[in-house]
Image (cartoon, rainbow over all chains, first blue to last red; front, side):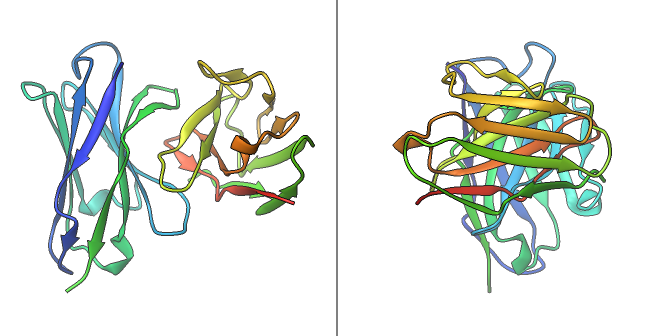
Length: 119
Length: 106
């Protein structure tokens, strides 16, 4: 059974960079025609797609966040990572990682991790 | 950006009754539409993809319909575990989610 697990600091200072990692177990991040994505959800609000990456490093980003987002992949560790720069309080959210195929929905999700932006 | 609009924002339903949730896209997304269920403190769970195909393990009381810009999720007879927030998502043009419909106990 495929499992995804987010990890990273729960508290980030304003203007700094939020960094999170998603570790994939029960399957290889390099197998199949899959992308691996990040989605966030501010407290009490809806879902926002941040971006996705495949095993070879090809990325697609939400245009509204494109200038601040970098997603990378480490196939040797079966992990992919998110960096969001110049954060403000509006970036406070639960961040989820998930698996997706092209023109398909997100079918496997991590449990999510809360990242709070505060001084 | 394709804007997804869900209605109503909140739906009050008695157990055993049916529920109909709507999702509208600002432009055609063909049948590239999914529905998710989210309970408090949990990640979303995929219910429906391709507008009408149930995901693995999803009960038959959940059904989806529509194409283009108008979509519907129907729950035929609400069970206690179905009270949750439901999101639609289009994956035809990048990825966008609707604002959600909360299905609460009446």
